[in-house]
Length: 184
Image (cartoon, rainbow, N blue to C red; front, side):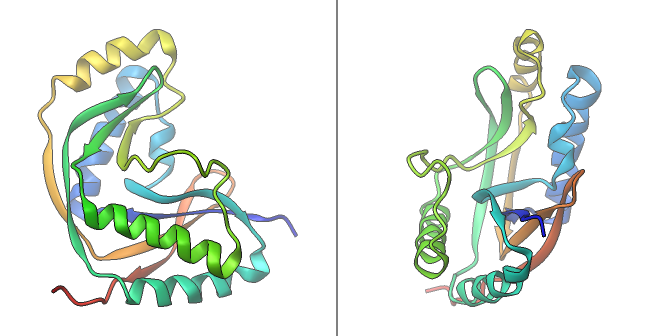
């Protein structure tokens, strides 16, 4: 049995997702960058990893336990930024609660499953991708010029974490887990 390819993320609310998908569609239509459309608009908490399909239920159970102990919080998207010269994204304003959630999840996954990111030294840089690595280098500056002029501000509530699984074509939301911890 082939391993499942999964990642863990925060998915924005429906209205925010619609706005971000429209920006991703603009990247696809105008700059030939459509790969971001293969996944719902999200902020990655744990990047893609391979998982034994027989053990998915155990992963889901642990994510449910983890989420139940986390507190919901707000996330503010503020303008565009880039990873030169292939990725354009909506920037996430500095957020200690998001940083803490991601760090706690990483610690939890390591402690329970010995899951360590393929690039553990890579710092957490929360963002929502608009144009992905399929954006050709010769189109990057044109795309960046376009998106960098757009004003974009949006706040949404992070109330759940989501396990996504690749189906061979695109990323599908497998399960979401509500953060039930109480606000102070």
